[in-house]
Image 1 (tube, rainbow, N blue to C red):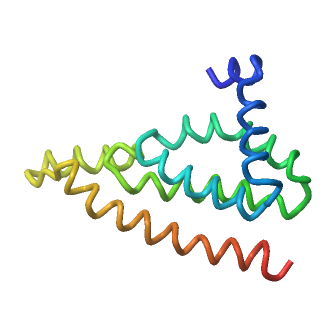
Image 2: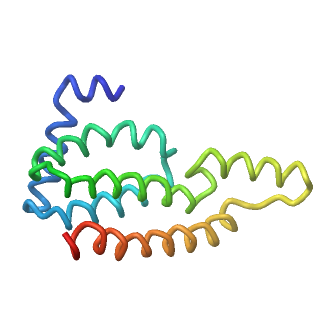
Length: 141
């Protein structure tokens, strides 16, 4: 499916629209990738999400000048997709497995109960990523 989106040019058009929306700012692009990836990974499993966003990120890297500093975009994608998956029971395969194990052990965890705690964990860990990315790629480069 991702291959078809690449072949038809949908991915390239989407990446160019994102690059235009960020007005060429690597910082804005990295924050957009981090937070949108986190939000979408809470509802879409992170593996197909990253498979879809990898070509978008590659195009963004080219559109925003490439180079060593552009690796912040890859890190933003990885951190957002990984940590955002902690927000809901369906955000990551491991969450589904642990809920099944809890059910089998007689300690069921409801979806909203998981989300109430998971969203706090996802938000807190993603907030930690913001100063990390800024310090690592913008403050001292």
